[in-house]
Amino acid sequence: MTPAALARYVAQQLANLLPDTDIDAVEAEISRHLPNTLDRLHYLIKHVKMWTPGKFDHLHSTQYCTFLYLLSNEIFTQTGERELPTRIFLLNKAMNAIDLFYEIDLPPVFFIGHSAGIVLAKATYGNYLVLYQNSTVGKNHGKAPKIGDGVIVYPNSAIIGDTEIGDHCVLGQGTSVINQIVPSNQFVFNGTGSSPLLKPTPQDQLPLEEYFRV
Image 1 (tube, rainbow, N blue to C red):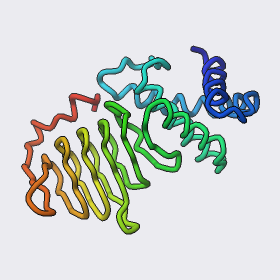
Image 2: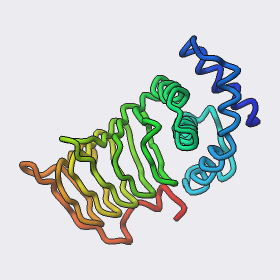
Image 3: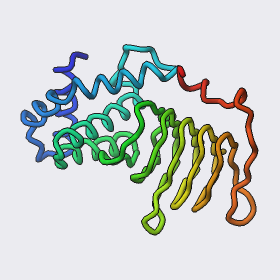
């Protein structure tokens, strides 16, 4: 799909979802921000191991979900405008069941395994982040988590509040970490009480290279 066709495609989707959309104005604005958005997207695709560098498929749901987030974030970052980014955010939420606001600064390289049920707050996200379905990053009493590089968050897991997750950590399925500090290179599981169970992992056994060309 050419950039012009892609801009029209997104504008038509927005008009179908939100009938008050001025499709021609929206198409023109999207076209203006597509070059930077596609540069960011292709940089990300180049690093995701299961994707083919240089190829973006708008019918690949995870790639398209990622594209919509990058487009909304790019427009907001460059213009400060909120209306069109909000519309794109709502389109992404309707299509992919993800709550990923355009003000959130995800790293240059990340991978969404399955988007359904992912909810992300404005937090600090390290590079080479992996997120699976129903994972949550949320604030607690105004405190937001800090997540290091190379963190993998498996399904139904939550990182909440004044939490710091070190580099190269893996949250096992269904794990909740609330107001805790987790050092680097750990597998994290639910423990007893409020403290997670940690199992140190040697560098050569970390699964990050399953996901990324690093």
